[in-house]
Image 1 (cartoon, rainbow, N blue to C red):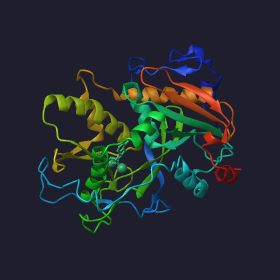
Image 2: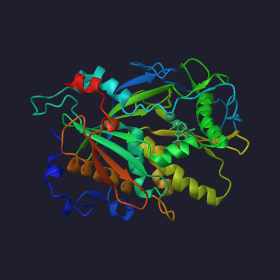
Image 3: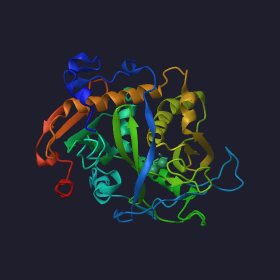
Image 4: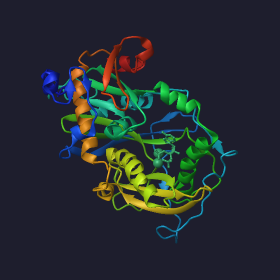
Length: 384
Ligand code: A3P
Ligand code: MG
Ligand code: MG
């Protein structure tokens, strides 16, 4: 089946969400019932090693190994600043990989996705959209985002829309001007992972291992949002060897850190901002559990808490100024329909650049300058 023909042929102006070429993001426009989202199923995975090299296996998958004898909300006392100066190898953030690793996976797994010629489709990748989970997380959060805008580059190639983020000027500036304090906070999120994950199910976490942010394990999943078929890849923190179901993604766990909550104001802010992002990120891949480590000002983990992803919407429901998961998903659904309506030229060299800033509508520009290209020539060649 090709891309959604209905939305391709419907006049955009008729749609209340779209005025010719722009899309509104106001959250009140997207209230309503929760759209159909099919639980993602894993079709593959890959690993990126300490040198950021791709491997078609799960060598970088880690195993959840919580401290024994510690009850909920007890303090494991881990110092998540430990090793920042001496045991930290940082990924080069100047290097923009775009969709590289997903395209590598697709190129090596064309048979998995199969082209169903009998069904009328001649698509080499029989999905409407291919993208990173992180890009979709940004979309889901958009109706509630007041600080950071985004740029999403879209190319339609052989019936599939590829979505790849471009760093905004503001994001680049923010990255280049990160303070030492912010750098340490970033490190602490990764260090927390190394206290609670082991490299194999029969080993214990290593408290002195080097934290290398080049390393990653990524799952590749198929999902569906209403009429939009998706192929999503996302980095997964760990798997739980004692999970009831060993079938991914239901065995996966997302790990998070956050500042210790000391008063009702901090609790409201946590529910409004952190839980929104945490829910969007984990819900998209079907990750059922989020384990949070709360850190003191001194950089010690003072409590651990387990959240069921599916409970989070109930935790925030009814609060003043809260967020609604249906709004997030309805907006994403409309944005994907908007892409299908706007991106009509199937050409691997063309890029439709969608831009959004808080308080504005989503607008787009079209580019054929190689500087904007998101599909490398080796990939285009491989699919031809
Ligand atoms: P925390 O989220 O616990 O702070 P993830 O949780 O998505 O697996 O990411 C792991 C860690 O990477 C984060 O831990 C954080 O330290 C760092 N990180 C991820 N995205 C980031 C971002 N946009 N800005 C700063 N740090 C980020
Ligand atoms: Mg992660
Ligand atoms: Mg995490």
